[in-house]
Image 1 (cartoon, rainbow, N blue to C red):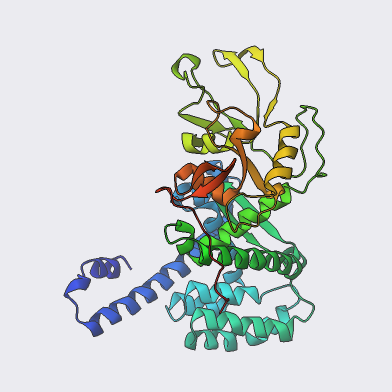
Image 2 (tube, rainbow, N blue to C red):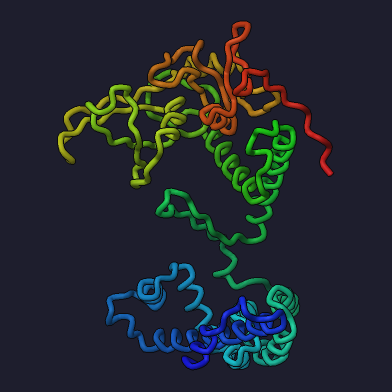
Length: 408
């Protein structure tokens, strides 16, 4: 194996003609499949011996992630495949020979359940032979059809439960991965499709200078999911808000974020930090802090050193509940022409940024999340005309949003 790898490393793809380049890629695929099979055998043996315990790991997945550097989700998938290949000898042999890929083995593993053991033992050779002649996507459809015939009671109970994982990356972004059952998936996709279509209509009607007009489907899906969460948080209580000044959730608006900004008082005369951190340590840029400060609850905790609390201020709202009701009555939603976002889905934006700008009705307007970001980014400029704030382009011309074209 090592000799073959050294031989392949010595090849210069740029020096090969077309047939030789194609042959190299096919050969690399077979070698990769053989290495995957060998790795799976080694993983299964480690799991059987339990030798990961001598390194302080709680299981094979944790050991594999720590010592090989792969993400834990990838390590867990490899451990699951290794355990299934022990019970799929025909597929394991085909993978070791480079006749199929790891994706074929994973697809076949879906067919191995507690209710299909007898049928699987009967048909494994036939299914493996199908895998040799089909790409992994088509073979996955074969397994789906095979399960429909041989496992009519549906998936395993452990597979029927929906699961969703959301975690922060080192860069402060959020990675989402999940697997939903048919009912939950249908609910999610129906709402996601409706919001996607609404966003697509808005993007088509947007000005050419609007970056959202050229969003990819994946970017628009992400925006639709965020909009779904924003609307959900805006409906968690009644629309009527008591002007109590308490920290309780208030209806008719998105839920506030918890932002912890650690700053040196004497270094920020304008009252705004250069950066802030969330309670989990994620660093936020000043532009994000400025946008969030438009409509949030603000509290003060004054510390000496890292642990001694000198002063704990009460939460204050900007704007107040009464001002919020007045904004709803006046603006009736996002003030940008053509935007139909309801008041509950809008932020109260300070035209003159907080804290320099006063928190009063003259300096406040309702903006949806999309247009709020665009105002802070300078894509939209608010100008006072005839006793109201109107949306303009940066060059001062009025922003007129045309009607979207009919959907194809």
